[in-house]
Image (cartoon, rainbow, N blue to C red; front, side, top):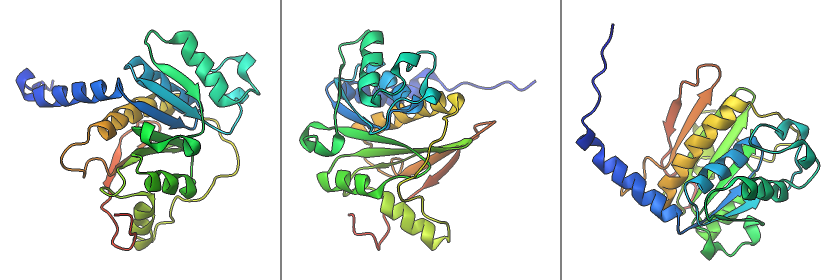
Length: 244
């Protein structure tokens, strides 16, 4: 039998203090969530449960039958705009004072957004991320596909690698970039949705109170079914990008 030695409680004090500072920042911040499938909705619920001051919900799609689930969208929501239904789900289940409203992140006053999270199927629309970079809005990228999920990088404009940096590094390594607007639909795996929402919430808190070193922000964590063993990659700013 293997006996694991747990860390001394005082050794975790700095991490606990940092988490507390990030939660306090969330409770005075407005955060946008773009992409309101089951994962995005669960992420919004997690941020609200932590006491987010305000959530702006954005998605051009309508609720599909595959989106319906326990604690999430209901059958009666099918066909309705996701932001409207998501706001209703959160308003009906919140025990906090979080303000929730549908909105369009691109048309939102960038000065009011402390951070944004983009949740999308397989590929990310680079036009959206470039607008957030131009507005100086810190943002987190979350992509998912059939049996996999990738959280990151977290982008602090002018300080960390952006999506184009990641694409350029992947081109250097002869890996096709994950860019472009995905056309089509896919059903999110509930295990990945719940796991990814928790991980994305933790990474969102990192964006609100970034550490002195930004290396940890600019990382991607990839989870794959069935064992969810994480694969982590770190992405420096690419010299050919110009985002910095």
